[in-house]
Amino acid sequence: MPAITGEEYKSRIDALDTEVWLDGKRIDGAISCHSAFKGVIQTQAELYDIQNNPDIKDTMTFISEKTSERIGASYLIPKSKADLEKRRQMVQRWARHSGGLMGRSPDYMNTVLASFAASIDVLKGEVNCFPERLVRFYEYARENDLSFTHTFVNPQSNRSKFAFFEKDVTNARIIKRMEEGLIVKGAKLLATQGGITDEILVFSAPGAQENCHAYGFSIPSDTPGLKFICRESFVNEDSPLSTRFEEMDTIVIFEDVLVPWERVFFHDNIKVANDFYVKGKFVPFTLHQIVARQVVKTEFLLGVAGRIVETINIGEYQHVQSKVTEIVRGLETMKALLYYSEAEAELDETGVMVPARQPLYVAINQFQEQYPRFTEIIQLLGASGLMSIPKESDFASPVGAEIDHYLRGYECKGKDRVALFRLAWDLTMSSFGSRQTLYERFFFGDPVRISQTIYQLYDEAASLNLVHELMNIKS
Ligand SMILES: Cc1cc2nc3c(=O)[nH]c(=O)nc-3n(C[C@H](O)[C@H](O)[C@H](O)COP(=O)(O)OP(=O)(O)OC[C@H]3O[C@@H](n4cnc5c(N)ncnc54)[C@H](O)[C@@H]3O)c2cc1C
Image (cartoon, rainbow, N blue to C red; front, side, top):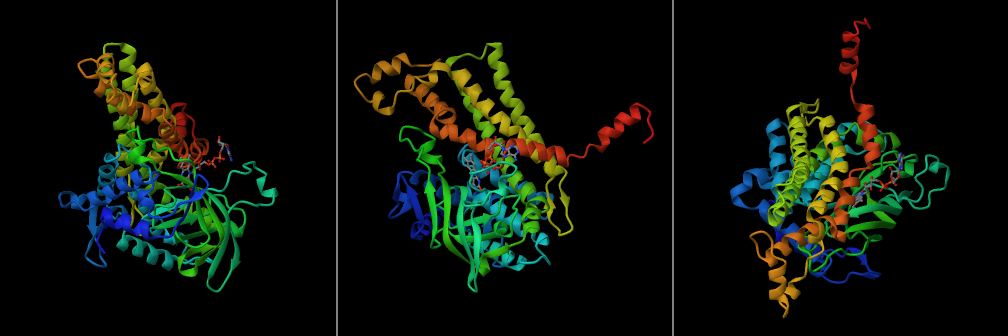
């Protein structure tokens, strides 16, 4: 089957009987028509249509070796630096459609699954591991252009170093091994886009301590016993971004869920569960997708800051220039790290071209700190303008002409100025905007622990030797 269209995605999601709970009620009927989901599902459908645009088919798709059909490039396992570049261009083309605001456009999870399939060497020859099932499933997903959510992280009930002394009563765990498959019970969080994808990929979080928590599998979103519990919706009909890009986050509950063996990639193996993250290709490939998107998002933030400067004519002030330059520095650094990761990519022993990890780790860890600062800069430049944002209905009312007059900007009408400031508010201050900030801080992991990982992995030998050389010490 070739890369799907937007309509195919929508009808497939609507046909599922997924158990999604919002505001204390189970969602009934076509989820693509529900007010909390219709915007993001429509945007996602547009992404699938972009994938089918004949003018950019060479960027967005590649030819399947199995069927000779054109399939999504987000499933491509790169074998050369040209493949990595193609992947970057594909990610950025999709990211431009949302200004980088959709962290879970389908390329994110498709990249994760491709990276898992490219890491089967970690599973080979290990107990309770089924690399051939993982490859079969990857090919099935790739050829059918399946969409995914995922959940890896355990509930936040106790994060102390000694939590393993306590009896675990929350984390999803294997409670039975049956002839038909595994039975899983418990919870996981979060699953962004939970309930609006074909499948959910479930892997144990790094650091599993018991066999029952060491697993990796994928199941259809409407598997019996699987429940997605939504946070409140941040869709606000008067906000330009949330109506199109609000990706719901869900808690996932497994109520004695049967995972058929064909979908179990490994189970009851703590060593493999941890090696899969550390030695597999999940980190470099997923970070390559993430940083490519974050570059586009930074371009978007820079554009919003620049438009505010123009609209109220504040470009002559030195501190305004410095603040905009801070975003420029962030953008150029992210781009440099992304290209550096490609330039330093290496073909590994399995024939896969792996981007360099360190520049990508540095990029994400830096962005976790910079993104909140960029949003702060937009607030500092926008000031009260971010609160003078009457709605469309105000402009259409008897006081509309006065509002249009009094809220005008430098060489622009009140209505246009308000549209820009409403967008800046939605980006940085609304519930949608605040969630964007939390997302960039945490979605790939705790910034503190990512920084520790950089410290632990960084090879300082050249720097240490330089000190010895300059001090003329023989080591
Ligand atoms: C908007 C959003 C969307 C997300 N979407 C998904 C998704 O789709 N799928 C998914 O699997 N996950 C998702 N996540 C979860 C994300 O991976 C986690 O937030 C992240 O890994 C951090 O874990 P935590 O939230 O449990 O924080 P915790 O680990 O509980 O950390 C809380 C605080 O305690 C500190 N802390 C805890 N333990 C330690 C320690 N060992 N050492 C030092 N400090 C510590 C942290 O620094 C932090 O300050 C999402 C998160 C957000 C915010």
